Image 1: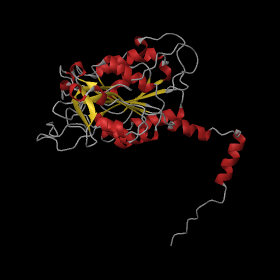
Image 2 (image 1 turned 90 degrees about the vertical axis):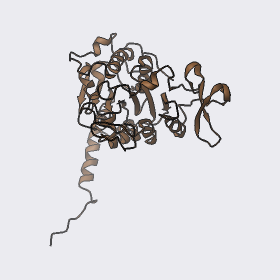
Image 3 (image 1 turned 120 degrees about the horizontal axis):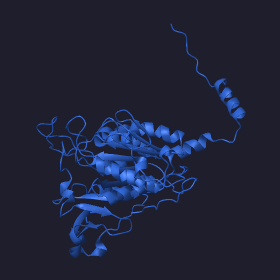
Length: 362
């Protein structure tokens, strides 16, 4: 997994590719600088607390000024996030955070733009906005908190709830096939796609650092526990026989106690899991996060919740370079002509012969 060291403090554009022209702080920052005076109102034990604490600890390391940090959220428990960070923020409308963040990123290339959303907010009413922000490769960093339930509205099933899930809105069990958010992001050809877990603070910080350092759309799914309406949804992955599969660029994909299990290519071409001792370490696949073709990363995403032992790859699935939409758009409007010349061109366009004639009624 690639991470960037914290930049030195100075009044200059950040050297980090993802941050581009975002200026750094002239003086050292600490966690208190990114802690607002608002009371945090999540349920006791909510995984959102861990993500918030990690974020507030990470931002000073990056050296980004608070006034150059913007957090945009939609609707849901996770979307209270902007209130608790002392920076600029927008608590927007249901599902529309990626669209609003696109506008902010287009208008201001000196801002670090974060989107905080949930599995209900982003993948139901907001699904269209999410996939197009990823497809366009807008320079924003999206954190999707996935607890596989609607928490704010008190426990209905969500687009990531498993088949058979009994909730207040599915008393006989859900018959919906759930989204795999990582597969969805890769299908939209997002240039940076990762997954992490709320309780793995070091891993969460490492992934978010890599995400903000990436220029373009960064998508990070965060497994997040809801202790009230879906408690223990990911406990099976965190136990002694952990099914979390750490993805590290250039390294064999192994996991489990003493790294005894590995991801292999089966004779039929599909990916599978075998004991390393049985197949040999040489036959375990190496992870390549920088592969231009997203198909391998997509195959890895399909190992989520598969097999007798529940599994879930975590880490960076894909990290490739692609021009950012907002950079390309700014380049189009940054023409060499003077303001008077541009005004004359606009007037010529408005008064030109390329017009429509509307016929009279009747």
